[in-house]
Image (cartoon, rainbow, N blue to C red; front, side, top):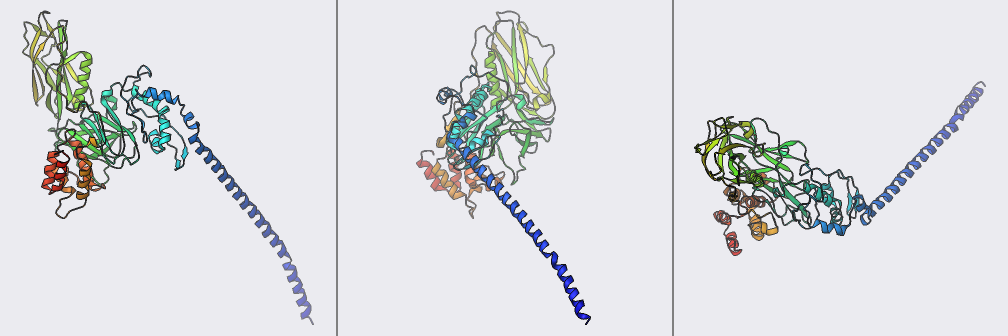
Length: 581
């Protein structure tokens, strides 16, 4: 009887305990509603952003066909600009990757644009432009070289006909000596740029410029001392400082930069290093000759008088040497000048001690011509050793009854490090002689130049001293002195069909070794074969280097003899059929 009521009370308590369940369901429902609202808001925001970006993209794509693009560059009248540009050379700082305009002649534009003292390769102003075309978006670029290389031909043409060409004028107005620059427009057929009588050139092999692109390329020698790399006491600058461009241009095979050096290339006495400078930043080490590896971006072929730099990076380069022993020697060029005419009693003789490179002598010849000087005798070479001894100059055998020297000491000296560094331009000293009478019209004497405890040279001078110019007898220049730009197949000695045949037959390894490795060995280009092995066509790169070495004559007879030794008789017949052998 007592069990039933107890059971009923417990059931009632259980019912009371379950009475809170509907409240929990309500909370879960509210939470679900809140989450759904948040998700809807998030989806709405995403959709709104997508619509906004789509509209923004459509707006930017319209810039291509509107005047807004040109307006951003402050254009001038395009037709008028074309007229003016016929006399304006291309900008040496811009990378006109798709430019298809003409090659302009160098003219004086100083009457239009003020001259400045800025370096030849000043950086362009930062340009932050975002352009879209039918092929996709172009990301913002700070460098016009990267920017213009990615634009379509139509856009690039428009840009170059406006503000960029104004930049060209300003840049070239700063170039006071156009004789140290060569430029041209090149496509995938390649070509050759040559700075006359300087020993500096840039070979653009066929296929180096990507198919369908056109680059306006240049090579220039920097003569200002502040453009030269810093060197330590035992280091010396062995080449001119040379830039090639446009910087940042995409290349599909190495170009070859050639420049004269003044080192006696004995690897036991020297450590020779290639340095480069990008965008006027600090000078950086690239590679030490003889220490190349698979990660080395350049290859250096060091010939007795010239170095050939194979690179896919267009930049500013210089070769620096560090003497390991005191027997390390660099070649100097000694050049003696006097006045073209002399109406006073005094007669000055200037003795230049230059690095033995063509461009150093060319610069002095140009300077003396402007000063009214003449070369008194053929320049001579002198081996200058890293022994820390000075260079001593003295004058002898003067007719003392007719002339007297105004030099109180017996000789003059140029400090060793002034010469060894190679960073001082036009280094010279002057001997001033005085004649007793204006009737004396001839000067005969000897001039001695030698390194203390080293080699020396003696000049026998026989000078005509008169008020009338006697004429300047400059040393003969090379036969390629008038060549600046060669475009297309005519720039190469090896005909294209023969070249293709050689590449197809020599690129594949041969069991007997009659492949590109033997070709490199026969041509003495086998110092570091791994560089060629990393290229898609090792034979092609070897032949490119051979072309650079043998420009402008192209010693095809020697190449034919090498191929005959390798058993390539069919190629010899082809050369004969082409009329080149």
